Amino acid sequence: MSLRAEAARRGGLRGRLAPRQQQVGSGEHLPLARALPYAREGGGQGRVLAGIGGPAVLVALGLATLLAAAGGWRGLTALAAASVVAALLALFFRAWLGGVTGDTLGATAKLCETAALVAFLAAG
Image 1 (cartoon, rainbow, N blue to C red):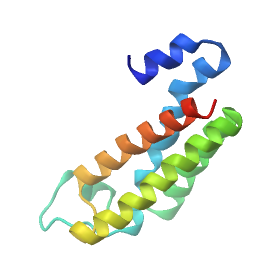
Image 2 (image 1 turned 180 degrees about the vertical axis):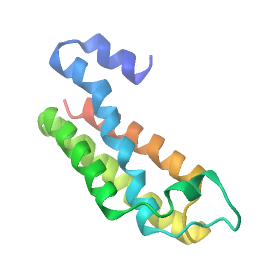
Image 3 (image 1 turned 45 degrees about the vertical axis):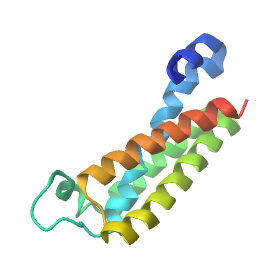
């Protein structure tokens, strides 16, 4: 059974919020694009985010925080889990590639979304 199906099966407010909590982690790749250099020599899809500005990152993280707050302490737990995953991946990508690529940013987004949803469901 998928995580979304499990969340829907549980029903109630928590069941309706769980799929939205997955989106809490979807902006966590933006700080990586801001903080780490682009690792690939030529162009690539990740190059689009290479010059993302600080205000855009702050807006994305602010929206994620508001969405997390809607889920109460479970939502904030989801945000914390996504943030920890993003920080660990940033350290790994810097050591492995010297920065980020479009593939690593996409992987970060999906892994953070998954961590947020799992943390939200596990929190109660």
